[in-house]
Length: 333
Image (tube, rainbow, N blue to C red; front, top):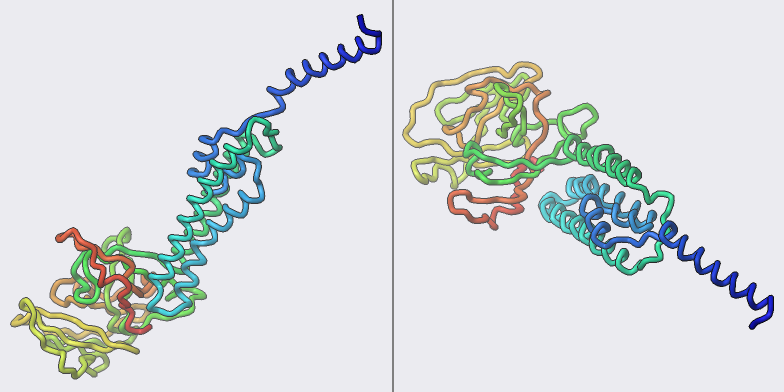
């Protein structure tokens, strides 16, 4: 039989073991890899927050959110021909960070083992608050700012802008135009994106031919602005393809190609563009509803101008038009 001190030591050790056993369920909360993965799929950084890595979670969250306006800013202020490539690089970078966040959260949760002690922010309501603030007040605002003030993409469904913009083209449009504080004004030759005068839920794309106060006159296929023909004298004019004749016209800084139906009679047309409006024509002149039909377009309804083809898909042939990707459509660039 042991001494009194040995018995006391044995009793204390057994008591300590019981206390550890009793405390373990409430003190340690092992991280579940599946939940960490799912949280990161919901929002980049949320899985890291679940794993107790608050700093990494914040960095991932802010980086992914900032990439949207940053990509548009770099694309717009860089070389015009590289816009689509810049956007592609940033899209791939964003996806890479997204998948990194998912994989990293899963692996970290798997390595943490059972001895994870809950942090003060490891609460379901904290995750919910972070998600709501993140998506609805930060990600949404950054994306909204990019669409409203920098750049937006548009899918083109019609043939009204042939041969320069094809049906199935996805174009990148510069939104830094024609608004309070914007850097650029509209110019003749711009491919304008504007609100439809007959249905304000839709957007149209047409060529700006005349500015406020300009006299527009159309004599058959000859378009005149302030009594001067905008048709260019070039050997490429009058080429006939599929019953169409083509001409090159000039804008304020560049030229563009237009097509008309051959052997078609047209009315003589004259109009002076009212103040606060612009006059538009489709490049496919006999297959478009432009200012000849709906009248001049209010300047306030011009929301951007087309810059470059981001993607192009031929719906009839079910093929990607790889040769069209990167095509610059802005004659005034």
